[in-house]
Length: 586
Ligand code: AMO
Ligand code: AMP
Image 1 (cartoon, rainbow, N blue to C red):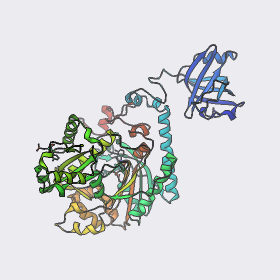
Image 2 (image 1 turned 90 degrees about the horizontal axis):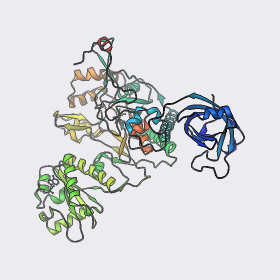
Image 3 (image 1 turned 30 degrees about the vertical axis):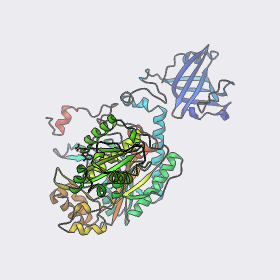
Image 4 (image 1 turned 135 degrees about the vertical axis):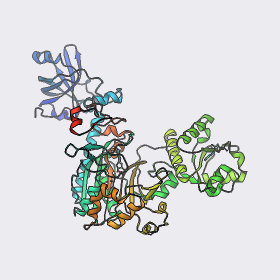
């Protein structure tokens, strides 16, 4: 190593020593014959002093530009009184340069390498290596390492074995589109990049490696958002001879280690559990944010006999009327409630009714449809105080939950109801196994088709008239502050059970055979009962570092359009490459 110490580690106790530093020129200031440079490496900055008495070195220093790479040997000295800088960790010392070697020059960077960058994300992603020199990103990347390390250490200590699984493989049914890789050696055939190692980890259980884990890249071709990347990382694990409680215990173990490594705070565990139905009913979401109240209420039974036909008819036709009350919402203007109504329409609601509980009588275009005692009953059910507003959606329960769940979140953000510094973990359990796909007129698996149903629900499955919407899965999702950060389940481990699920999902045996025949075959060779989980590492690190986008915790992320602005991937390939793959573009 050319360096003897990192810039950011120099302190008063090094005074008198000679140090060799390597790094980037952060800034240079000429002060009446003395040159001061801030030298930066990944630990921070230190001030270097070049004096004219040391002529050859001083002359070299005159040509230093920002982001030039240098090696400096010098004597550590205490800064004179009045020149100390309390804002930086090395602010009590400086280095009197003895030697200077320019290792490489730099073009002027397109944006300032500093804590706060005004530069837009596009230019930062194009020059990601410069962006990554900035302290906030360095902190995130380092924290990500510490979190991954804590998880790896913990799972290893618990007896888990890290095993790699293939990237060039077959499609995994996690519900997104696959990224395909054409095969040159088998023209016309394609590998699929794995959406997760789901099939392989189950097969590892059949193979007897009963505690598997992997910190692994997954690939999904889906529409991207702040918390979604086309390639992302999971902490993936699988165990044999376990039930939900065993898996959850292991996960809480490594999540605790990671949380404490990242935040230095005590882990707020054990993590409470909530059934899916309760989560939807109270929060309108399967990933509820428990940092604030504002819970949904079910008004269906109350309003079904009242005179307001929109509500009564909705209940009569099998729908429901749900609502939420927002503290101090009575001050909303007509424009604000109109805008919200319009927004609710775009989210799929037929309407958004509201009542303002003002000091006099309640205000709303719909109050005229209710008698005074009915309004009083509604207000009581709504738990509304004077000055609040209650919003109502009358629709199929799924629509009402969705719109009110989104409204709850939108209002909490707008009204600043979310306290900072709170960490609310939650297990959501007993998900429905299946959801009805109106377009395809078929049932789809909510998780993946290998998820076991609750033991009691096999009866419904085996009954040809059984109502599949009632079947509950042995699935569990981990939620942190309203974001789903992971999910898993106990799996089906008997071939005949799996075959029944495929039949109910209308997956023809040929298709099942083609897509995951290898798993089905493996199930016939002594598959043990098993279950597992996958944590979305990017999302978890994003939340722990307080970032709003997971792009800020990934070294080389892609844009919303799936583009790597630095390497320019994806990009066209040469005609020769296409010919070799037997591909013609249309
Ligand atoms: P699931 O599909 O729920 O489960 O994925 C697990 C977790 O991965 C994260 N995640 C993502 N993060 C960033 N970008 C994405 N595009 C993305 N997609 C998912 C989420 C999610 O909770 N094989 C199962 C796990 C199992 O059953 O063991 C699986 O992949 O945080
Ligand atoms: P209308 O009778 O259609 O003029 O509706 C009267 C009020 O009820 C309006 O404020 C609508 O926004 C509201 N409304 C209509 N349909 C629904 C619905 N499905 N859920 C909630 N409110 C609704």
